[in-house]
Length: 184
Image (cartoon, rainbow, N blue to C red; front, side, top):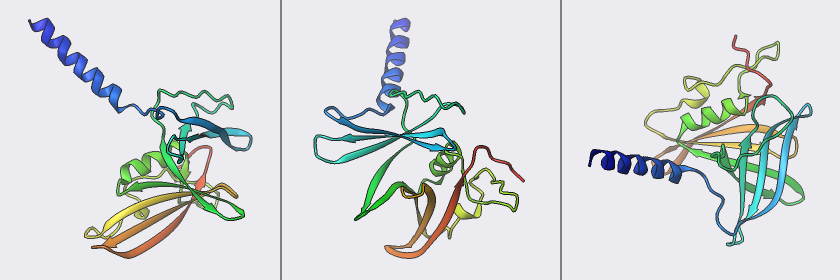
């Protein structure tokens, strides 16, 4: 009886973990697979899928290690799902909305090797939750939106703060892509 109970609990835990894995919706058609590169080395993979509903879904995967050889793993959870912002006659933007989850945002920035504070030698610090760019007025609700400009592949963070339903503050911070962080 005890073995059966342990097996049952083990099965529930495995099913719970399996359900948390990201899956591409059934019937989704892969449209495009793009590798973003810096100095000839791939740092992120973008896949575009056309969903049966007609919408387009963007999925971003991190690249393992510093090698230019890219290995895609569909069984891994993607870093983020971005929305396309189209601008007529221009490349447009990818928008990553983290809501008020600054922890998820900071982890995404670290994985992508994006930092916001650059010194005179061009070194960029590792982002941390304690950085002022992620802090706001505690009684206001925060929303973090990271934008990738597809024209020149620059990154900008919009930190919107709401007092009730009204937008009270909208700060923008440029983030820099680096090969490695150098804390100073």
